[in-house]
Image 1 (cartoon, one colour):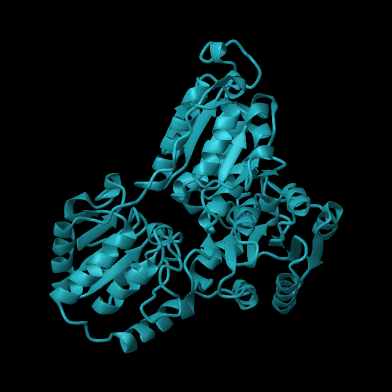
Image 2 (cartoon, one colour):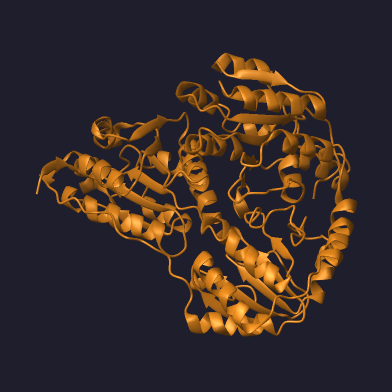
Length: 533
């Protein structure tokens, strides 16, 4: 066995498993983990300006198809700063790897007040990770990395954390590096697929509910085969946008909000095929039969335990088997295109709101079909859930049920790092953008030429509107003083533009995407608007 430090074992093991990019912030406990990166061919370290961005960028990198995004932070405040982003990845079932430091080995759990100590930080991070490991000996590092990647690539994809104290990273030991595993997510059993096919074949009016699991497993084509055979309309969660092309006549989009009138229409469907989703947002008022496909057995029947036929398995493999089973069980259903075209027109038309619609149309017109759109927690971001048409899976990213302000810009930078040849555009509000505006420096330093559109109403706009409508105009904490965003971008060395109309925004976006030679911030002055929800 070769002699090496624990830090060398860490980086070499991660590279063997396919890791290529680490988003991190160097600190004293992590020196022996960072130094070996220089000697590992094909491995890059991207320095961020706040630990929160390490997790967001790793998440964007992963969800945009770059492989396993990795965040590296110091213990204590570094890990806690990153925890909001790790929570977003957990909510969105995004398998990022988090490598954290620890305090000195002999002081772990002693609660003596040593630098960066949190007693016990594994308790703090467990709620937003699938698994967490503490490695105390250099020789054990490869096994921990191997197990972390097994967890990342099997079962439900979610973040995994490894924490290593500084002495372990600097310790020299005989280390046996391991070969990467042959990981896979298995399809459901033939027997379960046959049961599901029988239920769906006998359905009078089936409907499909597609979640983010369809996207992460690459199941879109299989899902469309099933939907077309059944002539079943497809609803998606926000994370599932793009599971089928929004231009397809079977696509019914997402629910606008809890008050969406389309919920009344759901009562007409007797069987729901839920794929890769907790099925929490349907909030059904009747008692249909549910066929639920999910790789995570804990999610089966979580929200409708009494009437759910559970199918445990990977979405892609299970849907491919289901498509074949349905072909054997029934002829293709008669086309519902004419009826569904009318339903789509009736559904989407009355819900459109100006000026949100004009700005949304401008953004969509400027971004090519393969461009990646990151929807921040802002009024255009909310509006995009229903009215940003998505034609290709994996091109719409949001913060799932975590709903983080500050998510959009660093996530877009991670996505652009994964896909440097594709346009990446995020929309953010002025308040949310300033959570992580400092990552303009990261974008410029590393040539990560994403585009951020900042809608500036000098307020937390949704909060201010709620205070005006529900509290008689008594405004507390919702009004903001902002910098000149164009000058702010230019101060960092990025391109700063201002667009005051939808037409000007479309032109600015097209120009920025075409040139792709610098990170770009486009400020859109924006007044109060009706609720997008």
